[in-house]
Length: 186
Image (cartoon, rainbow, N blue to C red; front, side, top):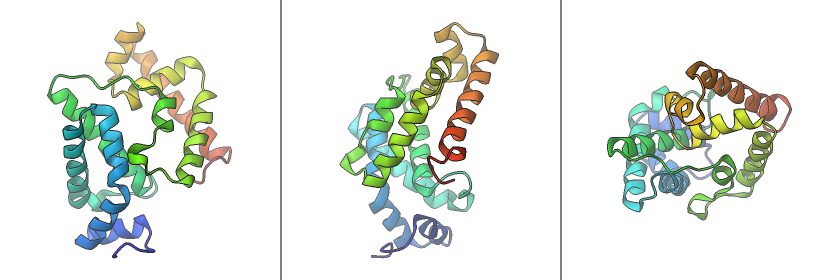
């Protein structure tokens, strides 16, 4: 297999050079997670399958844009899956399901979450639980439910500027809790 013993980062670099076997290896490693997240957001198996196709097509097309300083390849794929899922729902006039952060990070997409994932998810869950309620709520609505800042403002009856500020603060605080206080390696 092309991906045996090769890091995800190296596989993405190979995809940049148009290595189809590297793409297949990344698909084999991460398609179940991508599908699980897409299914969780869309609530529809066929939509989730289409999201998986979209994500790996985007990977093929946009691999040169990948920046390892911003996210791991797995995180990048899951971010794309979330965006694709929400875009599909919005195109059909549907809203994403409401999912709390603890439900999201505690889920096991496709049953493929490994021990290291469980450790990381535990750190994320603990860090999110440490956020003040107002910050945690805005973070959940934006990142796990796909709501726009304007939708969050209307739902919570807050000024748009307050929502933007809380979201920035939540992300910064979560980053500090996870990376600067030693829970995860950057």
